[in-house]
Length: 392
Image 1 (tube, rainbow, N blue to C red):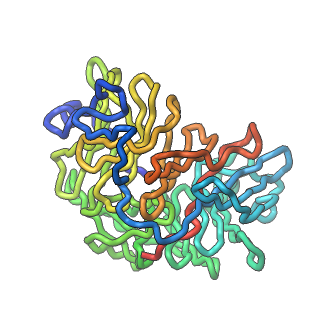
Image 2 (cartoon, rainbow, N blue to C red):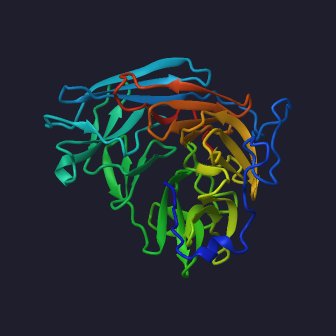
């Protein structure tokens, strides 16, 4: 989940907040005052932790044909692009349904215990009896679990439990199939991320009109302020920085255009603002598309496009307004960051139209396509998690 904040007052972003980013004269993809990396120079990558745990990307392809149901093809793909079959699940549907289609706007997530979360609908959805979420086994010996609502936001925990967020937050004991309600205080926003010890979920408590503090929503419904290590099964669970910072997108409209910025809103920051990056529209500055915290929680991974869309790259920003281009990407394509390995060695990127997945290797500074639609007219492959994640 991305916490987005629409700022209607132009002065919030334009006045006294951070460093303005703009294209460098050489159009190398750096921003003004950035330390760009020349192509011929060999430097240490932003990854500072050695890779000690082998990880592969779990990729799910949806095969939705003219038959009443649909199939799921699950593969484990190494960073070098070599794919290994995991499972093929045929005729996915809830019990008693004569037809079922996948809900591709809901997450598809693989658990470390060999389960797969997927949401389905029939007759176009839109009603409780037309939508469900399924927990499917990737191996034999277990039956599927049916959940009453689409899983709009969800996260697997370190013990194999599944937390469901949104209008009806709950936690599923995947071993017993029992679904229990999560009690959320009115002043608390629970984030789709487990604490590394499984004791609860990362949450933000609203303090006053602007500020918020990060903490843990315990399983008993009590909010405990303080920082807690996160269980990052996909890497996108890194929703706060090392000090509890929360970065959101702020947009301000003016008489001749708009400005968009990545703004740090806390804790203890608001109503002041700290701007990581910004661009104006119309304008000549590079435009960021997606962002995520790095493993240390001290910098951001950002996907960029030059203003003329003739260059794209994955950059790392370790200080405000200073972007380090790391991996060149195909220009003219907006890339979402859908997965980050535990050590930041690999970043999984999806094209905005969801037609392929790439892995960007931040050590070799190269990228490669790791998955494409198995059916030319079908939906693009989906990153569902990593095959191995350290438990801390």
